[in-house]
Image (cartoon, rainbow, N blue to C red; front, side, top):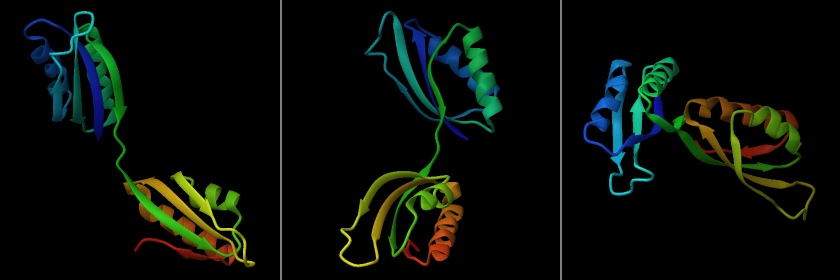
Length: 156
């Protein structure tokens, strides 16, 4: 699991090496590191890391260890990889149901509706979904569209 971790280190020699030890001890593999020594703030240097840990528990243990060492944790959050897709629905569609049942694991980042010139509406949904939930989300959208009698156009 990838995590975005930003810590504040005292602007003294050896602090970065000291802070990396709990990461290694808890199974962390550093993917990237940005040490912004040119921009200290109140005697602290921000260090941004992307770290791959075996589990959330390993990340939490690392944070606990860093805090015991009096290292300031500025940010610690899981990086969730997402994919951006476009779905088009043509025909009768209960938008509330599409969102609740078809997009429960996704985020709508864009939405367009056609002017109703015929009895069939046309909805264009720009969706962001976690990569590991893409197949489930597409299947949910297909199922909802089918039950509504709508045509749905999805990426292959």
